[in-house]
Image (cartoon, rainbow, N blue to C red):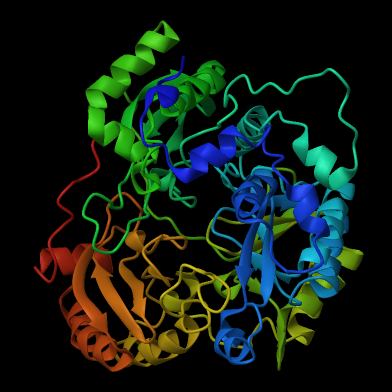
Length: 566
């Protein structure tokens, strides 16, 4: 018997999973109910495993209440693509679905996925069906399972990149749920009579909470590997992939006022050869399945399992289940966690163009018709599209003869030269927040661009307009845009009010520290203006802003540094 069945006071989610018949629940019946735009409350939980969150339009909340109408329920749908790669045909299909059923935009997420927003209940099944028709899926993009597996999206940078990308796909496919419920509900497949569903790894109540895996290739930490429950750091020797350092226990979400919750970076616990990657990942997940907290979901991530029992206990349990021991960690070095923009020639002689997409929102606006531009490119493109872990887009595998065509389309739609891409803007990320996310306290994606406009004036006045400083903003402390890893991090507390956090490393291996709480925009500008001026005048050679504010004593380095088990 798994440990989870012996726990008392199981959370409501555990009871819902237990009686769901492998994630079926009453989703079919809920979809057909014409009296409400919502699903049954239990099905709201279960539909996450199928790739969707039920939300409502918060911008219309007050008006609908006054008219005694239920909230304008709508759904976010997330599309899974390991490593974030899609074909032009798939891009065009997603683009069309966003217009037919969504709010006319595509969101590129911080986990290299696509999101549709604003889908009504009647549009859920058509959207998911069409996604699958173009050989993508929404399965397990949400829920208490392994989520989309992240890695550098360009396997043609080097043979190492190609091999790591293959591992990402293998891991992603290996840990998909085995239930046939998804195909029955959305794709009209009939369940074979007398054939019972079996989940050999997840079992019938799945994991205590979501689980995230990422693979990084030094010296670029462009997927923030330490923010994952399980991270693999590629180790190269003599031009070949020798294996991976293993890091465990990352997770950035927390709850305001609850000191038992906190952001945490993963610990490096050892090294394994590449042939053992799946075995190690499956064993780590099985430990979390058996020992993760199933009573309090705020304390249910792997980081809490490790901190409650101790890192040494975890490694001992891992070795016992494996039947062999990890080697000691190998040497590696990360230098940054951002993207490199513009054209890059791959080892396959094709070209790759990394395009800045502000906070991952693909849309059309006056003078800057990005969605239209990418549709035009997809219609002539013979390569692919690749999502980065920083909400940006790579137009990949471009023939030399087609580079000029793509540049012409981008210029004609106001994408290149539309706005000076400063160091702050190119290194910024924001979550969706208001007005669709039910957890958000404040704006994020819709507000950060205007705040950066104001901060850019200060940066330019100090000769720093091209200085790369990581800026992250989230509408709440759940950290979807990894605000705890921002050299300048903003966490929404209320409308127009943010906690300001400072001092993360530029390469993603140190969390930031709370500087001041509940700041207005005026307060933020007042605090950062002298800080930026001081950085311009007093920084040491190649010193990042995050390192500077710690050296100057503006904030202290985080109390708990990332631990490397030796």
